[in-house]
Image (tube, rainbow, N blue to C red; front, side):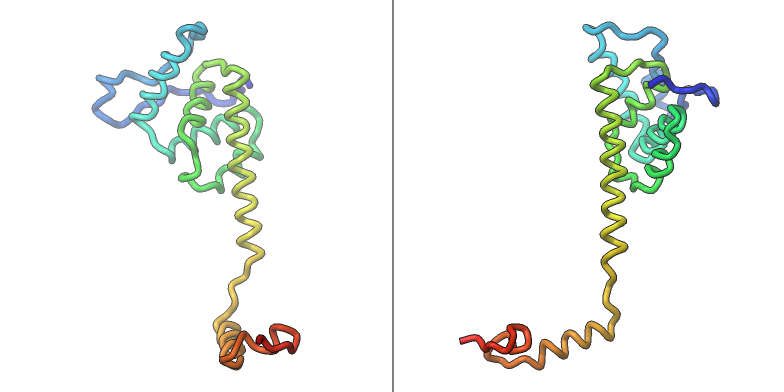
Length: 165
């Protein structure tokens, strides 16, 4: 997907003194040829990995989604915890914003990762909403029922009135 130019995309400026050794953010004015692509992507991954972590990866993906007219997914991804992010996909999204044309395989991988994160987060929210913790009074009531059973077995009430041998 080609990003829209709603706001200009500025190169990142890491706040470390190592920039003079590692260089600036990779720009993709020319597309890498097939034989050179893996090494150029590897160098870019190294640069992003050295300067940025999972929190920034989440920002990269949400910015990419917003700029590619997928604002609804960007809002949903905002509720996903930072720890769930996989760095490589955020870096690919940022590289796409900086001019890299993603291959079909790379585009599919990033899209699947976004769908997986949003889907997993929705399922966790549904489980959390449906599972209510019993109040303390209910817990005491359950324990009292457990204590009232005979010491011979699990109790007659739980097994339809049939005692264990």
